[in-house]
Image (tube, rainbow, N blue to C red; front, side, top):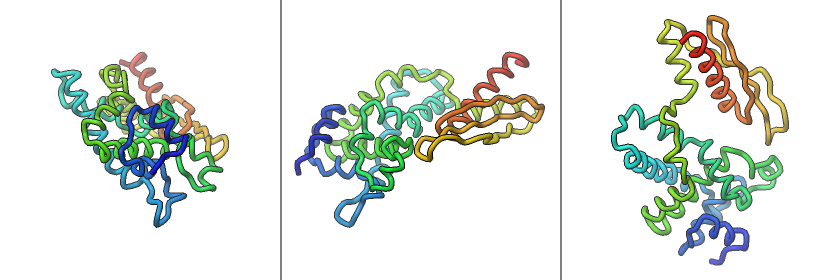
Length: 229
């Protein structure tokens, strides 16, 4: 099986020459265009998520031999979460080679965070099946690059951190309210407010509701730690 020019260029970008190119084709095939003879990437996504997790767990253990499980877990989550996978996918222009159905393509599927993240995991699985774990590990470490070494020492989820701050002071968990949603369906902008029962609140905007909640929580926590401690 010969790859088209777009996938050949993608192979050069990721630095892995496939012995079984059909694996790469499957990794970039979305369910919206799949058929009986053209399987989608969902099974590969499932496998790639596990391969990525193992690579990152090993890398974090090697990077900080004195870290506790409580310190490693949030760093791990920061490195394998969908947002990070989508960021890596954008850096290698994975969206440009996705095989999408017409409706998904017209709705901006090449830029959708979930599609990019899932396809990134599928590509990792494709490399794993094509050449084994060492090749997959090399790919992940190459693409994730400095992220492993620069992940925040305290990379806890901002919503979790704010909730822990509130509970430590006898307060219920904060509320998150979607105030607005702007833009087209393929590129929405969410405005979300994080509010404590005491009335303090912060508002943030982002391209996904989750990101907006995280940003609002981070801003509110920073404010409360500065004013209350």
